[in-house]
Amino acid sequence: MKKILFIISISSIAVLVASTLFYFFGKTGLPTTKVWLLIGTIGWFATVPFWMKK
Amino acid sequence: MEDKQADSNIVIEYERQPVPEDKTKPFRTFLGIFSSEHVAATELLIGSLFIASGSSAFDVFVGLLIGNTLAVLSWTFVTAPIAVKKRLTLYYQIEKIGGTRLVGIYNLVNGALWCFIGAAMIYVSATAVCVPLRIEMPKLTAIGPNSIWLVIIIFAVGAVISYVAAKGYDSVARFAEISAPWMILMFILMGIIAMVQLGMKTPSDFWEKAQTVIWKGGEPEEGYAKFTIWHVIFFSWFGNIGWHLGMGDLTLFRYAKKASYGLASATGMYLGHYVAWIACGLFYAVQLAEDPSNKGISPGPMANSIGGISGIILVLVAGWTTANPVIYRAGLAFQSLRPKWSRFKVTLVAGLIASFIAIFPGLCNKFLAVAALYGLILMPMGAVIFVDYYFMKRLKMEEFYAEKAGLSFYLPPLLAWLIALAACVWLNKSFGIEVFFLALPGWFIAAVLYLVLSKIMQKPVDLIESVKK
Image 1 (cartoon, chains in turn purple, brown):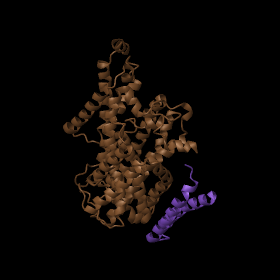
Image 2 (cartoon, chains in turn blue, yellow):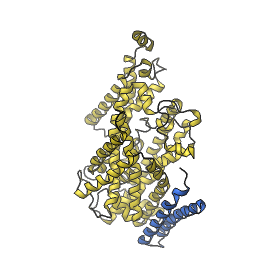
Image 3 (cartoon, rainbow over the protein chains, first blue to last red):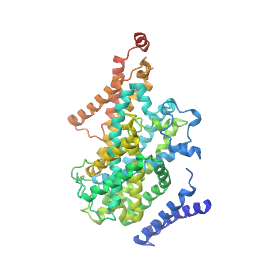
Image 4 (tube, rainbow over the protein chains, first blue to last red):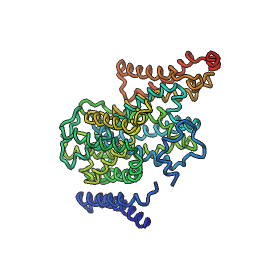
């Protein structure tokens, strides 16, 4: 389970980076980028507490 | 697991004894602490204020590189060697040098200053809450609040932060740990988005726009000091002088295996005080590009226009996670004056004071001067510790004199502190030397004063003991 959550966290970071790069290269608009940033943010905060050691 | 748990408590263990060799922490611990502590809410203010102060692109990019490098070297060659050799907290070293009453005075001053820094962080967080409520933000020249709603939100945010801090900030420390990597990444990504919004697509675009659109140089905004490359260098070097030359991070580096671990400060300086400051300058430039008359420093609305809801979350999280430990430390500093006081109540009072200060946006609008003043006030005690460590024995005097002489109060450190600050005020008033530069002469003045006063006032310890007997 922790592995899956870890993969989701890393994927969330990938979403954040990819959405910014898509915007940088003109593939998406700002409103779409903001939505993907929010998805990546939710993905990160929803999964990290379960695998990141205290 | 235990190691990591200990990392979060790193500043509150071994308060009155040297940290044992086997309890030292690895280099990566310091990398993590610096990268998370120096990517904070205040970066959102500082990055914008460089633009308001009329900095040019060259001054910002080169000045920050030089100033941050000097800060890293200060941690590595001044703070860390003493920390590793003595392995004592800042407070315990001050107590040994100047006695328990001097620590009390230092704590009072430190606690009051923490309230000002905490206030800035509460204000930054409150600007994020203002976005969905569509509350108008204060102007760049504002000193007091522009609406009752802003005051209510600031007190509401301050109340939540203070309550959590009063309960002990373990859970927030955990939340800060989780958010740190995301926060650093978001600063960078939102900086890239801001670049696109400013029409920067290639490296040559970047430099051209940086010079002509963002950091244009020229005259500063009304009421602001003109920031030259020297201002940028000294601000980035001395922005954290309380921690390096002021020795605040003795408490942290007493856990370092070697003095070279001071180099870990590079993560905080180059990520937080280089990349994040530049990114925040880009955020402010976007705001000015959208509405040139909107010059107010409002991190919430600024981040919203670039990153949307995630941007608002970034400002809220950056403010909250950094304000909590600051209010907590202010509470501890005040409580140390009267250990019988309830830490919970004292922390709430500290939070209340910080919230009250936060209702004045003038504090954040002038944050460059506030940050410089904060370091300036604490810096002389660092000079005292430096001299005590390197020169006392060599000049045949006693180090840790108050402890050895059994004194609860030893005057030279306090005199060196106060006279050095008075000399800084004199340099400012008589020669017009700005607050950003005063810490350098002030540090040397405090060092020389402590040395001379000790030479005059130190009595042989064995003589004092025989008189007591």
